[in-house]
Structures are given as structure tokens and as C-alpha cells.
Length: 179
Image (tube, rainbow, N blue to C red; front, side, top):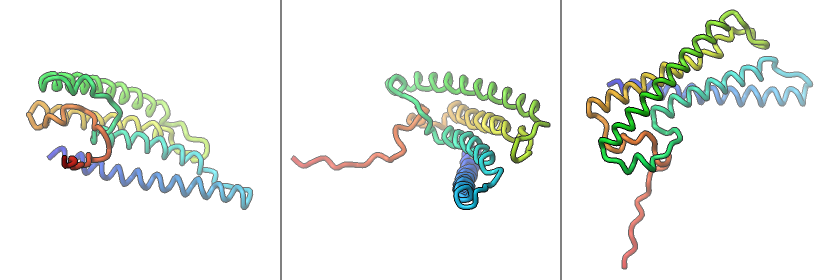
């Protein structure tokens, strides 16, 4: 149930990332055309594109964490017993939860510090810029805790005990040649 909710949340984030990327393309392209054609531009274009890019990166990190598509190596862990894989998964998730805590604390401090500071072009609170770290830390912690719960409640398959995927592409069944 919780995993389905997380998957829906990540799907919504994916659509938000698509919209952000499209808006970035439109802003930058329009700004370039206006600079060359009319010797003017959109003042907020560069700053808004930069903000969207930062948010896009953090939101993409949430989706990648949920899908297990972040970078990693499984050379050692894949050769361990099921118990060894579970132990490594718990250690890795506890370390990632600690990093989420550090990111949450640091980002929240920055949000508080920059609450009254405004950006140069958009004149928007800089707290919104630093808020992406808070969103990532909370979302990442929920995903990690759910994964740990699924491990403890024996809902993870052996394939899910390794925290990365080999490739984005599904393996192709190649028939063996007839001899």
C-alpha cells in the first residue's frame, strides 16, 4: 500500500520534471532568440531556469532512489549469501538515512537563514531555492524507511536485496544456436 503511494508520488514528480524541463527549454530558447533578434531578453529567464534545474536534479534523485536506478556496484554484494545481502542492505540504508538527516538539517537551516533574502531577478524568497533539499531529504527518508520495512517484514525478493539495477534496458532473451 505504501509502495503504491510512493510510486504515484514519484510518477507525479516525473511529470513535474517533464514540465520543468519543457519550461526551461522554452525560457532559454526564447531568451536567446530575443537577445539576437531584438537585443533584449527576459530578465528572469536565466535565474528561473537555474532554479528549475536544481529542483529537477533533486526530484530526479527521489525518483531514482525509488527505482533503484542510482549508480552503484554489486560485485561484492551479489556474491554474498541472502543473509549477507540483507546485512549490507540494512547498513547501506542506515547510512543513507543518516545522510538524509544531514541534508535535511543543513537545508532547513538554509531555508531559515534565507527566508527573508530574495533572489536578484525574480525577487522570490531564497528559502524556496533551498527547500529542494528538504523535500529530497524527507522523500528519500520515507522511501528508505519503506524499503527497510519491506525487508523486515520479508516482502523483498532476493533480487531486490541488491540496491541497484544492472541496466535500464530489460535483458533480451537470445535463443541459443542449434548445433
